[in-house]
Image (cartoon, rainbow, N blue to C red; front, side):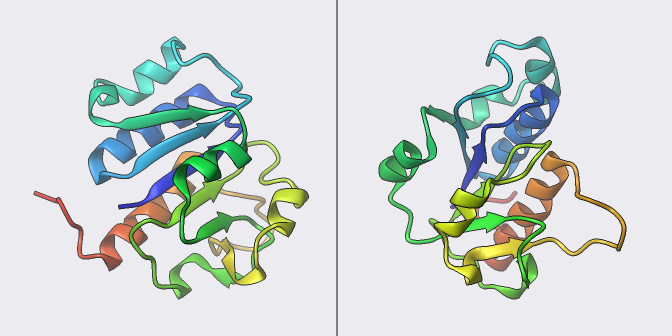
Length: 154
């Protein structure tokens, strides 16, 4: 399956929604500190409903530690600065799907550390800045899962 990496997430309900998404798709969720909330946050739990027990969630002190623990074959970063659409690649089991914080996206040093072909975007209409983080993660995870034939789906 896939690993979803949230780099310094800020808004508890977004992370709660992503926990629920990961429980439904089998993706593993990795939260990279610092977090903008505590894992015990009421809004986080409410958004995730009772799916916390079905999701695999790990917290990492920084991106370097996360990548060292995972050792992914490929890191795909999702950014408004990407030139290639998220739907124009072939996803592979074990891919790490990296998303930035809600208010600022992935920082330039993180993006610069990845090959340009691994910096992907979700197409949007002109004059809008971005999608909600949990919506963006859902779009990408479902595309990756679809390409693999929805393994584990009932």
